[in-house]
Length: 78
Figure 1 (cartoon, rainbow, N blue to C red):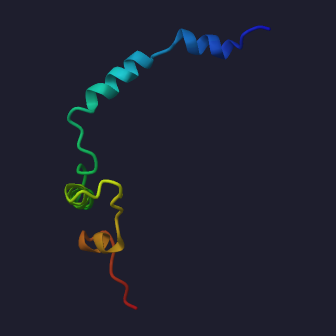
Figure 2: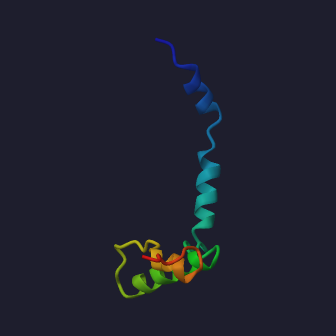
Figure 3: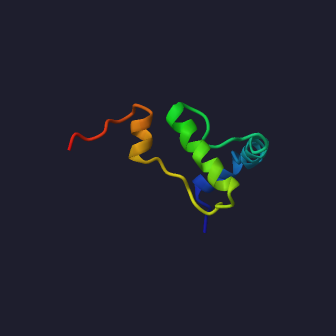
């Protein structure tokens, strides 16, 4: 049985060491969820507060009220 040519090509161009090195280098100072506009910063801050209170298992998701507070959406007239 012959080996698939795609397998040989993938093995020849393996760059897992480069990727692993880039990921390991970026984890040191990464701050997730606090970059971007005001909405992203607000959501990131809410999540930081939650995690500071010991609620590390939950994820903070944007709500409509967050969008309204940051002029990304409007409150319904109804």
